[in-house]
Structure formats: C-alpha cells, structure tokens
Amino acid sequence: MKEGQLSFQECYSKANSHCFGCGYSNHDGLHIKSYWSDEERQIAKACFVPDGKYTGGYPGFVYGGLIAAVLDCHGNGTAYAAGCKFFKVPLQSTDPFRYVTASLNIDFLRPTPMGCELELLAEVVEVTSKKVVMNLNVIANGTETVKCRMVSVLLRK
Image (cartoon, rainbow, N blue to C red; front, side, top):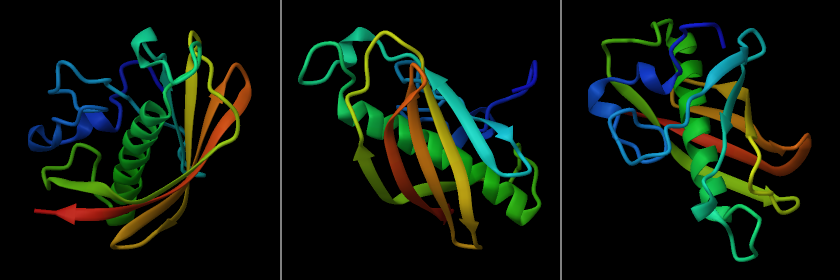
C-alpha cells in the first residue's frame, strides 16, 4: 500500500458500498481494506485485528464465521481489482460492477488466535470475463492458520 492510496473497497461505487464486511457506507461494519502487495503477480493483502467479541467456541481464538466473512470481503475486493485490470477500467470506474461469491472452500489448519493482526492474502490464479479464481490465506503471528479457494463471479446491474 502506498501512502494515500485507496483500498479496492473504497473504490466501489456508492451503490455497492453497504457490505457489512467491507462497505465504507456501513458504519457498523468491519471495514476490510485490500491493496495490491504485488500487482504484477496479482497478490493482494489486507490486515485485520478482530475485536474480542468475535471469539470462537474456545476462548482466545477467532470465530470461524468471522474468518469466512473477512476472507469473503478480501476475496471479492481482490476480484474487483483483478476484474478492473482484465476489463482495462480504472478502480474508480463509473461502471458499477461487483463480484459476488460463487464458492468459498475454507480449510481451517489450526485455531486462529485473538489479539493479533491477521494478514489476509489473496493470489489471483484465473480471470475470465465472468469469474475470478483465487487462493486465500490467513496468517497470524507468522503462521498460516487458514487456506481457502474462492471463486467470485461478476454481477452487473
């Protein structure tokens, strides 16, 4: 991320900015913000520190549903950025399009601890005119705790 750079999600049109996980218009949301960490290789990163209220069934670890939500938002934001590159339109396009989740296959490798910054990574592996396929990971304290395969599909109004 470069100083002053907008996240992928901050480039969504106002009409597409209400998501609980990443929408800038949702005041009660999580506000996930994704950026290219390596634009050439199409690898994106977001960082998130879960609030203590999002603990899972065992104290001290993150609720799996929250992990799914933040990966969903990071993945769809990355799909949007990859789609903009594919269609050769700027991130702040006036053509309001969004990607939505078609498939989110999550492997929880180990419990994800609370109280630390979670690094969310997405690597784009395929982009077509209809979908984006990605591999996603959650890293906590330098350890991979979750891996995921995601397919996002283009939703146009």
